Image 1 (tube, rainbow over the protein chains, first blue to last red):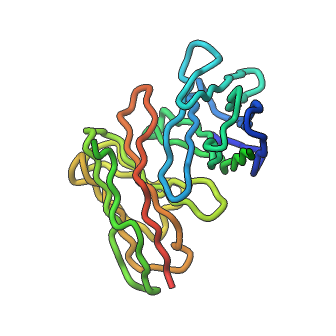
Image 2: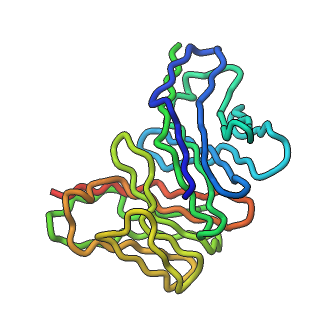
Length: 114
Length: 112
C-alpha cells in the first residue's frame, strides 16, 4: 500500500527566509505526487504536482518542489516566505490503479512570522 | 465557475439521526471522492467513484453509504450518526489523467 509521511507537524520561519516542508513517500511503481494547501475553514487548494520530467517542479504562489527518487522525497520549497503563506500543507501520492485515489500525509502547519 | 459545491456547510446531529451530505461538480469529472478530516489529522478516504453507477470503499467506510446516479452528484449518507463521525467532510472530483483533484469547501458535522 502506498503511504506518505510528513515528519514535521509544524514549521516556523521568518518572513523573507527560505522555507522547506518535508515529504517522503512509499509507492509501488512510478509516483504521482502532489502538494495541497489549506487555509483556515477552507477546502484544499492544489499547489503543484510531479508526474514525470524535471525533478524541480514549479507551482502556484512561488512554491516549488524537488522530486528525489533515491531518497523517495518530494519536499516543498519557497525562496522567500510571506506571512500569507501561513497555512496547513499536505503532501499526497496518487494510486493510479485504484480510482486515482490520493493518499495524504498528516499535514504540516507552516507559520511565517513577520 | 462553481467547481465542487458541498451542502450544508455546517450541521449538528443528535446521536442516531441520519443525514445526507450533498456534493455536486460541474466539470464533467468522472472521479469523485469523499474524505473526512479530523482535528490535527490528515484526510482519510471514505468512499470514491470512478463514474456514474460505480462506487467503492476507501479507508474508513463504516457508518457511511454513497450513490452515484449521475456524473455530477455524489451524496454521502450517514444512517445512524455517532459521535465518532464528528469531523469535517470534504468532497473532491478529478478528471483522471495527469490532474489532481478539485475540493469543495467542506461540511463541518458535529454529532452530540
